[in-house]
Image 1 (cartoon, rainbow, N blue to C red):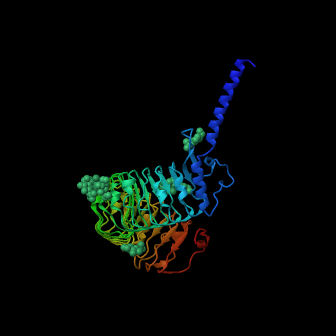
Image 2 (image 1 turned 60 degrees about the vertical axis):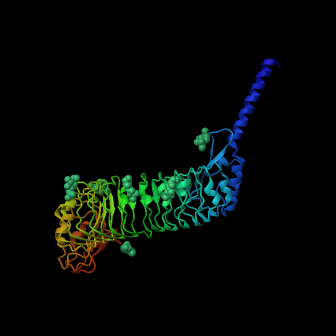
Image 3 (image 1 turned 135 degrees about the horizontal axis):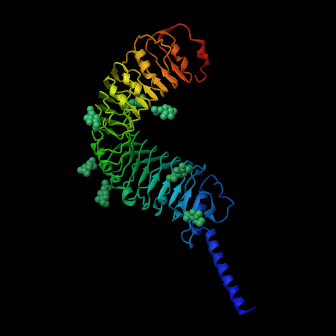
Length: 463
Ligand SMILES: *[C@@H]1O[C@H](CO)[C@@H](O)[C@H](O)[C@H]1NC(C)=O
Ligand SMILES: *[C@@H]1O[C@H](CO)[C@@H](O)[C@H](O)[C@H]1NC(C)=O
Ligand SMILES: *[C@@H]1O[C@H](CO)[C@@H](O)[C@H](O)[C@H]1NC(C)=O
Ligand SMILES: *[C@@H]1O[C@H](CO)[C@@H](O)[C@H](O)[C@H]1NC(C)=O
Ligand SMILES: *[C@@H]1O[C@H](CO)[C@@H](O)[C@H](O)[C@H]1NC(C)=O
Ligand SMILES: *[C@@H]1O[C@H](CO)[C@@H](O)[C@H](O)[C@H]1NC(C)=O
Ligand SMILES: *[C@@H]1O[C@H](CO)[C@@H](O)[C@H](O)[C@H]1NC(C)=O
């Protein structure tokens, strides 16, 4: 063998040894992480599909992702085992994944309390433990300095909120604590979580809101429904100029709604239903160009329903049912062209459905039960022009009127029709013949007589 050949062989050997080392590094996870994952899995009561009998290269295991940015250490950076029917408890060893950035164990059957150490994983950015059976308090001494996203909703956590949350986790953008048993005051420290965009506290037992909340300039989603908040809604809410969704329904708020909607120029959805709000609709609310969905049902609001439809062009869903609104239904409401759902039932309205309602071509659901309406015949003549109407509820109106007999009335898309509790006279409405996609029909508590036509048996969707 010549020295040149020997040299070539040596180079080849060195080269292949080098790439063998590289490949073996690519194939093996960090020993520390391997131990942590094995510890985690041994605390569970269920097996993780694809983990048993697998190689010691944990980077190839189901739900595990390693970081290959550096050739030297293959660290586990994410563990995503959502919806894997995992049961049992989480033990301390999981916190041994020092480089972990994403932990997603949502939609499982995990229970018990969370190990305190989990709240000290320095690199953790995303923590999703939602929809399990976890209990206990969130450790007061949490220190998740990289955290951006926390979802621990749909568990049974309890206790007040962590007071240090924003000191140790200043970059948090998404916090979902909904559907747990948290109680007391929402932590005033939240005012220092200046990056917060989504704050979801619905379905707990929180009682009061700290002022600091109204300083969160990036907040776009604020869900506070189904808690025990009471007293007036602070006009500080107007400071949250980036709000897109605000839901404060099913609490015990009282007083008048603050007239701050002019400042909430991005607000698309506002729900304050099932509270004890009184007073008229704020001027800035009925002049909001951004609102798409407005729900104030089940309060004691009064005054007229005076939407400025030349401005409210995006409004699709309006639910003002079960309040004390009064006066006739304004014909100008027919200029809210995007309206698809309109619920004004159970108010002290009066008069007739305005003729111009025939222009509401997007209307799918119209509920006007118990609103002191008169003239069923004209109501139906007008509404038949709303071609997309699928749900029409007119019950408890038109006292003792005559059931219209006009066979030319057309409601082709109608699936649900209720004209009950009206004491109507006359016979079974023959104009229903064209409504052959009808699924639900309620004509109870009227004084109709005569027979039900045979063609009615052919309504195959009715139940
Ligand atoms: C690791 O490398 C593979 C192949 O080059 C790539 O597909 C994968 O996305 C990388 N993973 C990470 C976490 O960077
Ligand atoms: C967690 O995993 C579930 C799937 O089980 C997924 O729907 C959810 O979006 C994930 N969470 C995050 C924060 O990515
Ligand atoms: C917010 O942070 C500042 C500075 O760290 C601190 O002085 C203040 O007390 C904090 N506010 C709350 C409500 O925790
Ligand atoms: C709302 O913003 C104004 C101006 O920035 C400020 O003076 C006021 O204190 C804020 N209100 C609340 C309740 O945070
Ligand atoms: C209406 O709101 C009250 C609270 O103001 C609540 O107790 C009640 O359950 C609500 N009713 C409906 C039908 O939602
Ligand atoms: C309705 O909005 C228009 C356009 O902004 C405005 O000129 C008008 O004054 C408003 N009407 C009422 C009653 O507020
Ligand atoms: C009526 O409904 C049809 C089918 O759902 C839809 O394509 C159409 O856009 C609707 N018309 C209006 C004016 O909303």
